[in-house]
Length: 182
Image 1 (cartoon, rainbow, N blue to C red):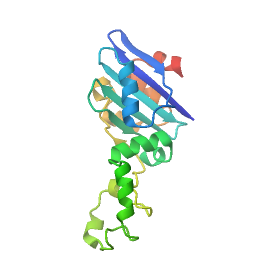
Image 2 (cartoon, rainbow, N blue to C red):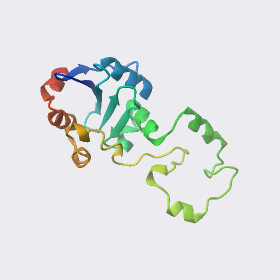
Image 3 (cartoon, rainbow, N blue to C red):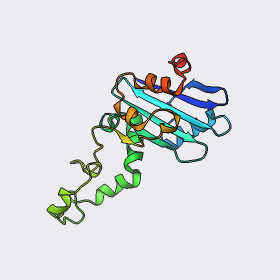
């Protein structure tokens, strides 16, 4: 079960709206939904949470690219909306999935073996699963500073668990507004 809400910053504070994700298939769809909720191209923060397993924060400022933070990328990747955000953060798209067909069974192109040196220095975000896809890290992923100028530091965001969205809303000064749409 998902909970999703949009918080749009206005001159008078924050306005919240319950968000229906049925028509959201891509990050662009979600960003467009956030921009529709914006007042004068001001900041909109979208929250997505799945039963305390993970939460995501997506920040949209006018026409700038959305900024994304996921509390647990591995858990998020196992759900439809979380997978959409994880794929975006890892830079995967449909073309990447098509490229997997060109890999040999050992995960390399044309059966060439990778040197042992490259495996030792690999980035955990670049880990490849047996199916050939990138494996998201078991923990936070994305821009952990996306709310720093709004009162939630990187350290605070990374330490959140449990009812994280309420804690974030409290720091933004809009707990009542968020709870009204919960």
